[in-house]
Image (cartoon, rainbow, N blue to C red; front, side, top):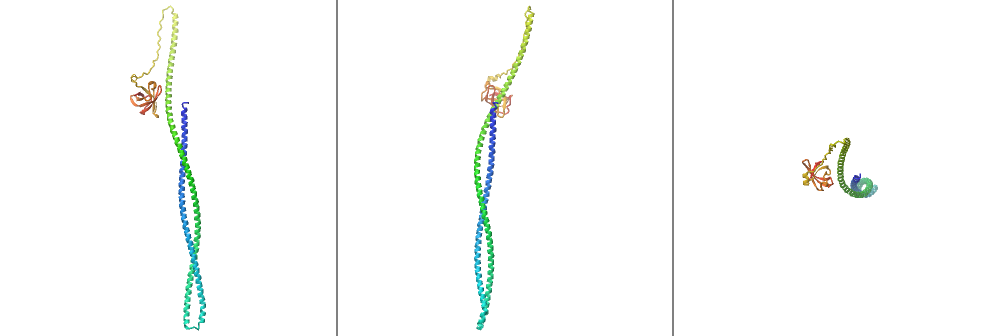
Length: 391
């Protein structure tokens, strides 16, 4: 448990750092999404502001046109009123001339009656005078009728202009209201854009801070990964040591069992010798006067102990030979059964064989008393029990 405690702490740190990194990444993604939404809203507001400005300009242009038209209508109205006054004056003048002619016509017979005793030349001139008076009267009536018609037309135009003037006034009031509303909307949009710009700046600053935090966490994560790699190597080394210790324990247990077996056999032989000695003493007492009795020899067979002898040629040449105990293909290193006691040093290179076939090369990176760890320099098919020979 004490050996696994650093690994457990490292695993907990990795889980916590991963959770924190995931949280920061999620927050960063959320802020990025909110920023994109704000940018889209800002773009929409800018487009809407532009369209409102264009609409405002168009309304201002229409308002100016309506004002120009209204001034023209007022000018036409004043011109029509002036013409109406002129027509009224002409009408009054024509009426006066007509009254004068009617008065002359009324006075005409009296002149004729009173001038009957006059000469014949005056009698001839009288019809010509009536003809000119009638002609003048007809012309004046025609002019009066024309003036009345022009007066009616002028009044109709004045009424139509008054109507148009009222409509234009109503439209101008509506346009003024629309202009005021658009100006208020534009001001509101500008204030909203300013607020959103400030929010965007704040979000940008927050995102920069988050990027710094993410970078820091990334660096910490890289450091933790490196530490985890080292911890994995240490774990592999410890596992190999544990495996070697277990194998050594198994060997010791096997040797102890063999020793117990030998001791048991020795104990049985000892009991047998004891029984034979008692029998021999009993026989010797019975045969006191007899000659001495020769006892048969007792032979105790011992099991021959098999001991691995090193290769005489290898010892003579200084070449070390051993076997592969364990292989870690992920980290690309092996454990061999040669250690410092056998003369192995860090940096020694061994060739790996399987039978007579060459497999690859390994280089010693760490030594213990009975085993050593070596990196795989070439070859990827190394397995346990392969033979290693020093170069």
